[in-house]
Amino acid sequence: MKKIVLAALLVGLSPLAWADGFLINDVRIFNGVDTSLSTGNVLVENGLISRVSATPIEVGDDVVVIDGNQRVLTPGFIDLHVHLTSHVPYNQPDAHGTVVGAVANDVARHFLDSGFTTVRDAGGTHPDLARAIELGTVYGPRVFPSGAVLSQTGGHGDWRHSSVANPTLMGTDPYIHADQAVIVDGVDQHLAAVRENLRFGATQIKIMGGGGVMSDYDPIHSLQPSPAEIRAAVQAAGDFGTYVLAHAYTSEAVRRLIDNGVRCIEHGLLIDNATAKYVKKNDVVISTQLVVYRALKDLPGITETHLEKLAIVLEGQENLIGLIKKYDITTGFATDLIGGMYPMLTREFTERAMYWSPAEVLTQATSESASVIRMSGKLNRHGNFGEIREGWVADILLHNGNPLDDISILRDPANNLALIMKGGEIVKNTISN
Ligand SMILES: [Zn+2]
Image (cartoon, rainbow, N blue to C red; front, side, top):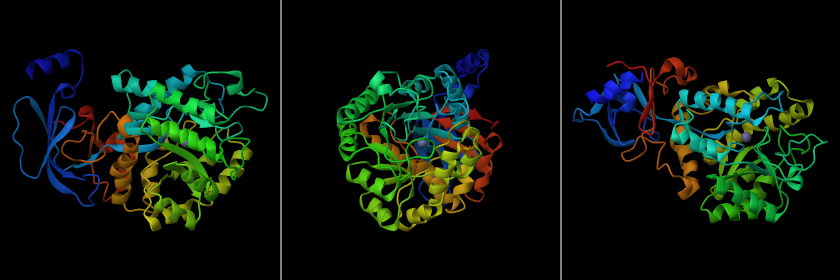
């Protein structure tokens, strides 16, 4: 241990970051599932939670002891709908990929420093960024990337100006500039695009399954793409043991996606009661977001067309929340912030607390989101996380204050997150023993 401390001091890092094991004593534990706190101690070894105990845990000298001092301990948070590389401001649409990457670095940092140890990128981020974070080259949360979004010509991911030629027909790299979508038409192109994403390391596939707000040429009611194309994407994903998530708002779009094998609907704001019932019956997830729809109107660069479409979908938001509650639909926690809005990330907690209890919101952001991530099957190379459980990955937060009493403490992670541990590694620690 002495040698480790010395080495750490020499390079100016916290010695804690170098230890093999940590004992976090005297904490009140929210385990990600149970709504009440239990007092206890948590031992972390080799990146995993090796023991959770109400009685003292004996450890040797090689384990660093952290005095939790009755702080609340929770699993690290998970966001199911992130676009790490979509944060160049919306009024700078021609930014080069180097700028996109530089901004993504700030975004990734913000997520981890806000307590998000895992994110599912819902399209646009190259899987290599997930790998760079895993290797420690870039600081950020664990990323489950979807690769480039699949969109049909004229669909929600076809953001070309009307004078720009179709990139699929002309051939281009979807990651150059801020496009991050691949325009595909026909079964063969859907198969090829999914396989290409999987080849790069995508852990699930994202398709644009209907009209969207921030695109110019597709009305909200439009159905995208054809049933055969959806089935092709689902089949190619399924052949790798994973699933397709799809952007969609209307009942018609959602039903068509479900009927052709899609397992996770993004947004879903305009579905009716019967469709919500259908979603539940088919055990499909609706990953929806609150803050982005309420804040988007102020985004610099948003157009009249986008504002008109925003008004249409926003009208359904409260109804959807009611349906998710009524049918107990799996939803998790998701934000979909874009265009530089990422500092609003933690506002999602308090916005949700207008409809769900703090315990329910925390469950959404931990165990429930983790259950959705696990739909990636064997493409998940990170093990189980999202709960405080023996044998599970040690993604751990220590809070100053109790988010179950006052969820607004999560809005200020700089002051209220005392410790952030990702995969057994401490990335922030303000507790001095
Ligand atoms: Zn999105």
